[in-house]
Structures are given as structure tokens and as C-alpha cells.
Length: 103
Image (cartoon, rainbow, N blue to C red):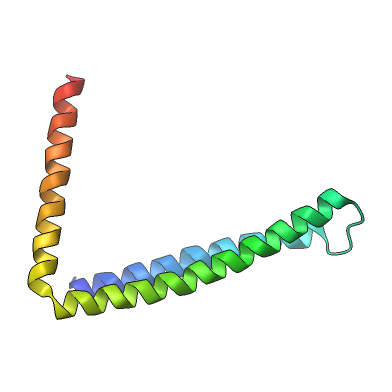
């Protein structure tokens, strides 16, 4: 799988995750009811609506960020490879030293 394909898959999966959040939040709204009379129900309903809006905004921003990241990867493949290699080296170093302390 190429980097472009992986980026597309990650973007799709992030979108699906945000869609799940929005669906769940909307279900909560339906259960709370819009005509609730008490202050707690009204506050909970407002919180659910705000969470749904935030999830939708986060979804849109994650798609934008993923597209920009893809553009950067295509424009600077050598720098991308160096960053990935450094990240893998740091992760390997951290895991090696973590196992050493636990033993």
C-alpha cells in the first residue's frame, strides 16, 4: 500500500469515526428530548448539540489536515522519509529502554 493510499484510508477512517460520534450524540439528543422542562435536561441537551457541532468541525478539519499532509509528503519525499526513519528509531530506542527497566 502506498503512502497516498494509506493517507486516503486514514482520512476515510477518521471520517467514519467522526460520523459515529455525531450519530451517537444525535441519539443522545433524541433521548433527552427538546421539550424538556427542567434545567438539567436543557443543559444536557445544549451540551449534546455543542458536542455534535464540535465533532463535525473536527471531522472537517481532520480531512483538511490529512490533505495538506499528503501534499507535503508528495512535495518533500526525502524529508518525509527522514522524519519517518527518525520516528521509528526513537520508538525503537524508547521500547528497548523501557524493556530494560522492567526486567
